[in-house]
Length: 200
Image (cartoon, rainbow, N blue to C red; front, side):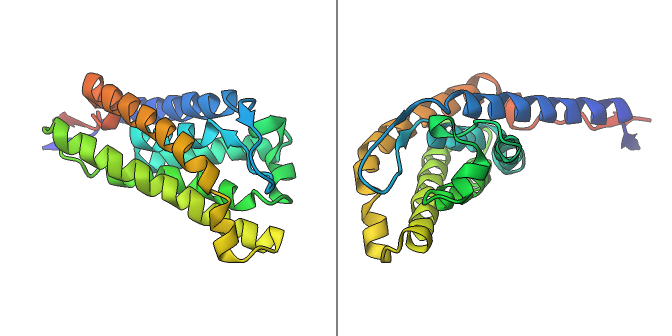
């Protein structure tokens, strides 16, 4: 017979909180890397890639928790977004859809990545690629919907705003997939060794 180990449960919680905080800090640290592109007010940033990386490494639950923490700090007025903006400021601008994408994309990336079997590196890589691609597509889709709502564009024009970002984002996506693959290969416990039970 086995029972829940309270100490192990606390260890799991502390690890999850630590991972969440570290990745939220990573996302925030990239807030000041932004290159203006086009006329719709959407810059090339590294944060969107860091958010996908967070989901690929931490999985859906911890990934979205890191995104909520990062955006929540911005709701307090901290400059957590590209160009030193807070979430409060960005909510009234044309990039609001991309903020929603920042919540959805780590969940999707993690959900797909964590479906990979643990004993196959090839399968892991494939799921990471799929998860990253779906997450990036969700950012484009939700960002475009936000532009339709806030910038008085039709949907085709809003989608076209993303075109200048595709090549840079694919390069960033390849980098984060390689990083996530390296992390999961070197540190498989990040994905989910859970210390939950002890014999009685």
